[in-house]
Length: 70
Image (cartoon, rainbow, N blue to C red; front, side):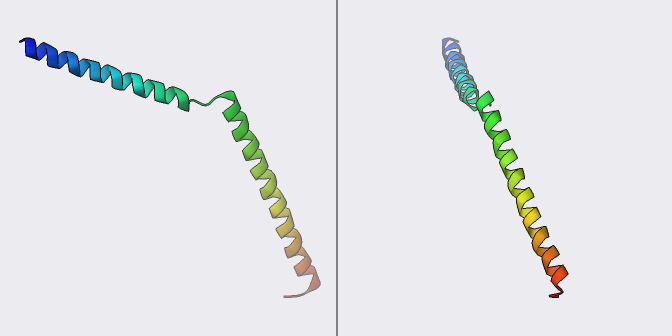
């Protein structure tokens, strides 16, 4: 019976250590305000780039269409 309690105690300690480690690891992954702001800035920059690219491509297509170079 003593061996059963020793094994259960060891398993409980290992389980508690694993739960503690996972909680500590996930705490580092939570998004901070700086991460959100950086993500929003990156998204805004991407959208500006896409808009400029779209405008440039539309200008080239429009210019080619008006010159009759089909």
